[in-house]
Image (cartoon, helix red, strand yellow):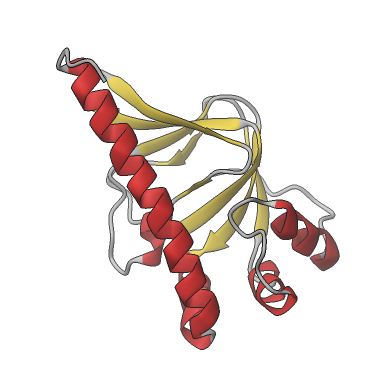
Length: 161
């Protein structure tokens, strides 16, 4: 699941986090904490980033490329939302024992920073200010995902939105 590019040092990770809209504005100390657990990953086109029904284990900050958030049925998949550079996915990894509802599939070569759930949860518990800020930002993502799902469902049912 995603290859790991070589050669990204701690300073580069901090710079990437500082530039990412989701983590922009965090303190240097908070960025250092996140950089310590960030793993750069690369997905080829059409590679599964998160499989539906899979136990959530990673939070992803998209650095380049794009992914599709899809609701899957046995015979088809519906794209609920497209995400690109500056977006995040895998928010359910912040909840213990939470399964992924949507499939996330790369639409093209995509690079991301992967934050493993156990380490991210520990950092948020250790630094409650960072934890609160991270969860508040994540809640905005969740609200956007719910809104995108509502709009897509309404469109499928023939309602004008």
